[in-house]
Length: 117
Image 1 (tube, rainbow, N blue to C red):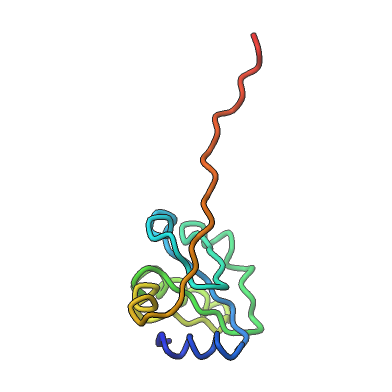
Image 2: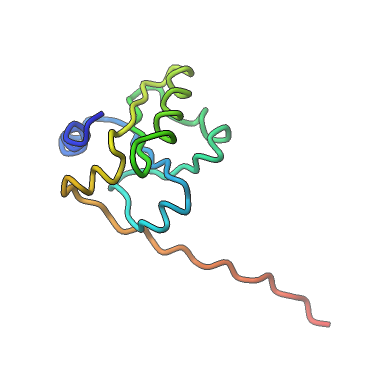
């Protein structure tokens, strides 16, 4: 799917599931996402694949629209999901000047409290 097509879908409320499947590090380093996207860790795809809606198209994007999103789209299609990848990924989306939102800052992990001696 081309960037301008997804932009029209989102602008006009065409029902789709928008999935950010960038690796956690790439996503955190970038600090932005396309509004309305749900992040799913691609390394854990076997855990979440059955939860992807089959009643509407799913659009997946990664950093550049290459291996990660294309591989996951192929797997989801084999399961009966109308899945597509965003050509060029979020890089192309941002390159086209389309809006992104800042990610909410994650809370750093706190060391477990030690019981008093």
